[in-house]
Length: 262
Length: 193
Image (cartoon, rainbow over all chains, first blue to last red; front, top):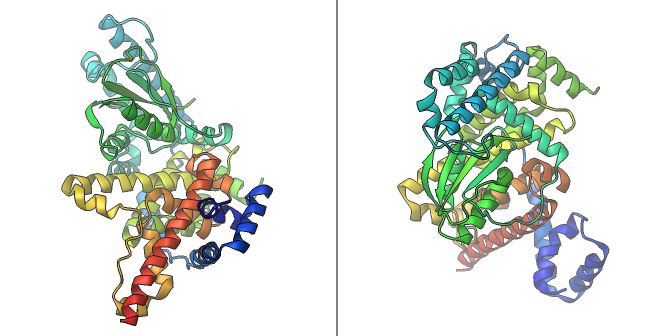
């Protein structure tokens, strides 16, 4: 084991998660190398310092503030009526997505490819407001306000995302490694309640990728080569399962559609 | 059914007292997680409140196959990361160069004024060094070395592979150690002079 490997393995050794062979090699190196011995001691010291940090006291009135924001006395909103409303909303969205796609004469992957921005709204404004009314119970105004502050406007979406997040935790282990996006359309099956097109916009900006469009559940990002495609895949796979569903392999734009996980 | 599971069930059934008890089980931990992620008491309070509001809204869909602590920490982590991205976006819009410099994750070796180090000591310095880490490393240091979660639990909370947890813990601690070392060296040099 050289000094570089030693440095990488110090932490794992301290936490006792190093396999036996590496542990022996590390211990041998420790006896021979003065510099690494110092690094080892310093790492131990840093860990114990971090470990000894005292917890910060909770701000005064934290709980009262929280409950006044939530609004006391109400039942939790993720109740059966809301799930039912969400299911109806989901069916309506799928129905009108299909309708919008059919109207443009596009065939294939009807239920999985989102229509371009604006098509649903232009085609079915009345139906969209119906969906919105189901998703926005007026009784939960304080909580809705908090949602608005945080950039979340869709309770049901959050609920289903939280559900997906839990599903992912319990049923799937994250996969090592990553490949790139090949086509021009991907779906991301999100695993938590925080992922919105806004999140994808921030990622694009963060990764210096050009954002060329967005709608309520998707964004379009320009890519200049495989490297950008790999970067994007890597970032998206942190958010959830990525499905490459497009058929154009030469496009310089990728549509990313946020989907509720299964 | 343990106490926590009972509280969750009662909360879902609309019992606000039960939800309050559930909040009391986690409020300090979640606030402290947000505090270390932001290094700012006001931001931490806002974020922790946001976390509990999300928990309140989503509790009905919480499935008991996973641990509640993993679930709530994941919400907390995502809320903090989302907040970081929003802030970074604002900063980038204003001054990309300044933000890039601020996000550099290498020890800067910038010596501290003597009076600062005397009063703050190492303990304060380590807090600053944690605050300077990038969010991925910061979260892993908080979860592992402050809140003592196992590698597997961290993998579940952050939804990253176990291998990534291991390498991030190694890198984050090494970076923390090197940053601290270089800042203390800067301080010692000034003292000698």
